[in-house]
Length: 171
Image 1 (cartoon, helix red, strand yellow):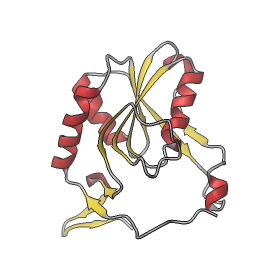
Image 2 (cartoon, rainbow, N blue to C red):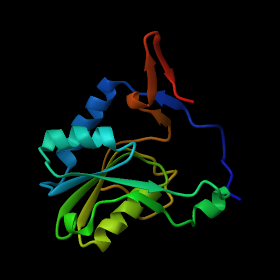
Image 3 (cartoon, rainbow, N blue to C red):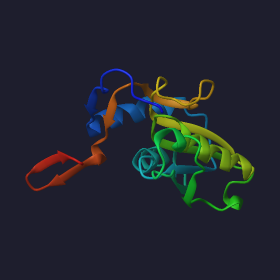
Image 4 (cartoon, one colour):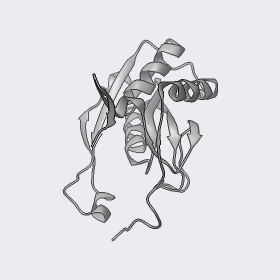
């Protein structure tokens, strides 16, 4: 069984200004032009939208991938993903696709999406706001583009519940 080593990661709550700075750092790295942008739900929707707007990408697609949670941690690493939503192959074939997610933890979701785009004949590139190399399941694979490297547990501004009395972190 895989167990966590050491103390829990430090937690960092980001502001919308932090997100603007991360996007500003990421944009000049991107190797466009792109035929389409593929956002991974849910974390990639907001950074993907910001990138799509900044780069004037008109073809915006979404992918929703789920891995089983009914298995123990070690078995989950080998489980096949379920694609809850994915673009049709003809939207990807012979196209340069920018795949966006908020964070690369293990890298399993975004690399699964990349493989499916490649299988459809697309040319994917991967972009994330945060890359966690010490948590990655892949020694030789990483995002093509990322704004920051961290080991912290990141809480993005869109992950905060808002109400008329202020905000609180989601449970």
